[in-house]
Length: 608
Ligand SMILES: [Zn+2]
Image (cartoon, rainbow, N blue to C red; front, side, top):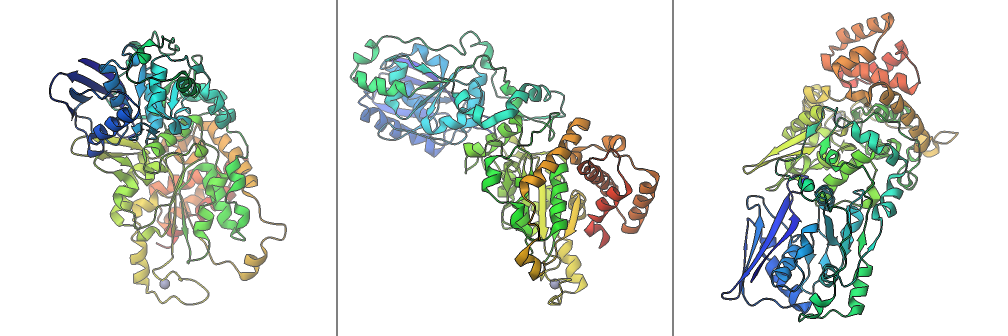
């Protein structure tokens, strides 16, 4: 007879609220009951746990076992509670010591043989476990992702027996700085700016996505959050039916890692907040490995004005729409945008990684600091694009947070789906409401769209293949609504490239992404130094202060406004674009030339 309480974590949006796994063993007919709004996969956990315990040669108590997952109103999913339930049963039946479990949080799915299997969404769990000041016991496969949280103490294990050996103090663990091993190489120079970076969160017009049910357990545990548990004697385990040999324990505990970096001032709280695009720091010009390995603008022959537009879009984080017949390389060009974008800051990287971590695909540590690039197909449902489900998961627009969302064949997307984009394009986040609860996902992405000029795709093509009527053309274009178009800073035509250029390319060779990226970062740094954000994120008030025109430019813009019937929003977009063009030229003031180039990127306004 006994009661054990183990800390674990569930999922709600990109949060990982605490779940208490309470195990009570009482006299009565042998059975195992599970209560607390558990899904099927969680309910099945009793069979997995039973198998894992028996196959690890522990006793499975022939008594009445009740497992309660609290809070009861939080939906529980997957096999993530298996380890906590197993440890709860072992502790309640006094097969492992109960005392120390309060310092740990446990996650992981168990196999029938007792192996620990990885779970989804580890990064948000690690962030919250660190905040609660507890050590996280987790499957070994998940440890690289969890170690991205600086200063966290981890006990990665691959079998239930390893965890039990550790908790029974068979051998003290060897503390290692896992964040120094891993995060350091990953975050490189940006680390030094993290404190500065984090301080800036508070004054940002941030949307707080912390859900209310997060407990700030830090106070309670403030005394012992980062101490290494002292080893206790072997007798707890050796007196029980399961006997771990010394060799077992040695093997087990050798694998355990505790990353102890109590000196770090990293404040995890900030990770759960969204701030507008970029912070006031200088980006460094470097060439990350993925740029060398992956797609390069040098692969695309010709299309110089389109490459120029991408350079401007990258420098100012402007939205861009490409219009051209099929096969002119629109998606090929768009896929190369990440190769000229600056790396994410550490804060941005954590936000993006946390979103990817809870998605079906999961997060790959290799993508740390890399701006995400998402290209959903036009048949994608609204849920796939914006997120949803009974326990809502992030959609493509959130997976593209801090990166690029490429929508090919833009008019082919369901119009309702496209209209949903308007809100996140302005606010940088999306709220998904469900009967039971509401979750908020960050979604600040750079939109790159591509479309054909007409339904058949060959309008204006020299082949003369297009027989679309003007009515068909306007109906096709009207699928992309005016308000959505207004939120896209640049629209330009991508014509067919002559065979000669296609074959030979530029005589001096095409410019590489690395070379374009150098200019992009220099221009972005000018914007960051001036306003602390990319030019596309400037408010109307800031546009007035920053994007100042001379008399001649004013006249030109007035004329363009009247001639093309530009909206107020388009007016501001042109000014921001002109500022980015001036930044790329390292010019203090916006000249007539910069402005006229900006106006030239409003193709669809002119054909309205
Ligand atoms: Zn046509």
